[in-house]
Length: 315
Image 1 (spheres, helix red, strand yellow):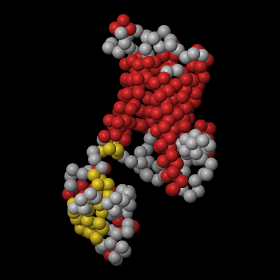
Image 2 (cartoon, helix red, strand yellow):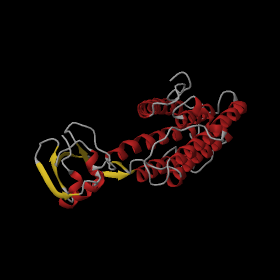
Image 3 (tube, one colour):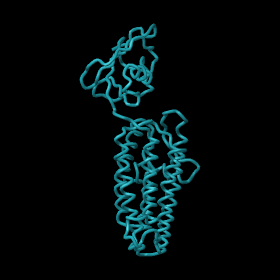
Image 4 (cartoon, rainbow, N blue to C red):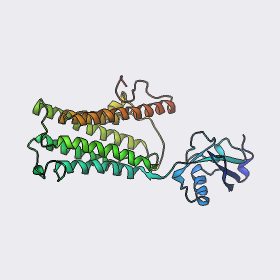
């Protein structure tokens, strides 16, 4: 369908329900240079229950959602544009989700560390472990989540403002549940330190801290790629910071370093639940990294061919 002398005047926009094909709303006098974001705001005025973040607007009932920045006159529609609407369900901001899912593990772990009543037998209430690795593990775990909280507030720039509300329950169950399971065993009065003692703990601490600095460096590099308030995507390249040089071989080094941190923590505590958390996290991060890698390849024709999603040359 061609645009009929659109520059001359306004146009009509018809919005249908993607499932039932019922007509939900007709907007007349829409400027040709209106964006999908602006059309969502107009639709919201006639249907207050569907705020813009809940709306998925598409050209085809089963098609992909249009981006908020897409402009009406650049879309393949006639004088009356027909769009299909789907309700994405209640939304919650990414910042809120991250703050909730990261505050939980921080607090939960400390409850076990301080051995508050009703966790271990009463005689152990508020006692402290005799093993220094238990105190070190608590510092590392707390450091990790404090770092994540600060990054959420001051470093990350989110390309999508919101996510479905139901995700927060799933994410919190995962993070909070694993934190409790790990903390229960590491802070248990019967916990035994790693088999190779101090040397194992020291090596593990070096791995953990190295990877935490690496992860932070990547987050800063990714932040600097995206100007404030924009959604532009660029290929990330190594910067002057040596921790970012891994970009030569990996598309998502933030996940590579995250994996390294948890391998370090596993080695430090020599605790099975930690190893399991590391494994599950690795599987999930591999899925994310492969998706990100695929979208880089699709979007940038000059994408460096040497890069792997998460593990250099392997995965």
